[in-house]
Length: 185
Image (tube, rainbow, N blue to C red; front, side, top):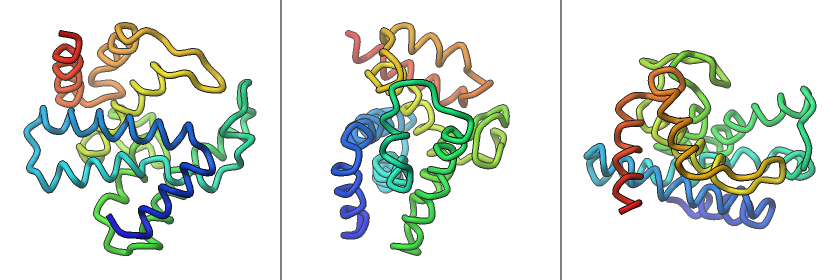
């Protein structure tokens, strides 16, 4: 990680602490999933760093939208959906050789093509982005947000497994379930 990437994380921590804490949790879970999938050490580092920066584009979203306690308007939701592109631009603009900027760009893409910003399908989405997508979804579901209460871990795991092959990659879901089962023991 470069000094600029560290600086961006520091800005995120100051700008919206909950998004920063979420990013740390997503990075930790993404790393566990990638280890379960037997990734090489250098790829593990890339996934961890990418997951840690996956929401860095939220630095360009108004704080009142990020912390809004009620349902977002259509216009606000469209602004939120721009954060992957903002994140990619921030990472590439500050470090053109950033090896994990694609994770920030593609972590909301879904296997069935229903994701954003491009509506890519399974074979078009790098596996590291799909790992972060599962970790991100799980963390959002199981932690208090300004707009929703958390759900129990078991329910979140069930929601992810119910979307296996639809929203989430089956190999990633299998590794995620293995990690979660091991952690419950």
